[in-house]
Length: 324
Image (cartoon, rainbow, N blue to C red):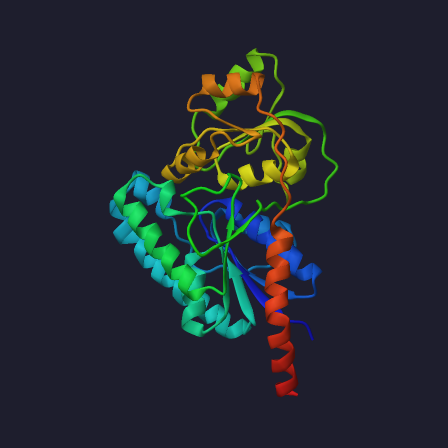
């Protein structure tokens, strides 16, 4: 028998799915049996990578906070309660020895079911300027430091005062899939909240650049974006998952933020080798023409998987002996 580990990803944005899939792969390579909980836009990528996930109620706080504040109360909060309830039922059915997650609702469900939890996030109160978001993130950070066996903090930037106390800092995380990938010049990876992508691509083409746009009319969904990022001359993105993958791939990255969390990330990224921050299409174009130096980072996925397996295997072996 092998230890059964649950992996759950936060349902806002596909990047949450890819980072947790990277952890799932690494755990399986070390002999674990992995069961996955998904939800939101990342679900199809979980399936494309060979998993048939459990899909609890999805939650979207970013969209309601920014575009429909009334929906926070009428939609997001009730769905959050449902997601915790759904995930608690899933954990009871699966009976894993631990859950590894970047989903706060999965952590709450693990607390209810007394399942050991390992938490993974770059989220920190310092990313936000609004009082409500900073306060909520402060509470969540303290909660996860209290209940998680390990709180993994994947960061590209140098250690700074924005880093939470009491966390385990690890290198960036990337889902390093294999693929025969054509050579790419500029790869644009927009987030759900990006705008002006078509105009940006047009500006880059007028400067003689060959542009590939993820999610565009000519783009076919792929199980892992990492090989495309690795083959690109430069990547343009908004979300932190792509930032991490560019860091591991060694590809210069231009980041244009749109949400509060993305702007917080860019504040910390400024001055980090391999990255440039741009606020407008014109600035993005200039950064692509004069790109930052190559980033150099290892993949932190192995560190996380080694820690989890080292801690649960002795307990799992003891429990298996008792049950037999």
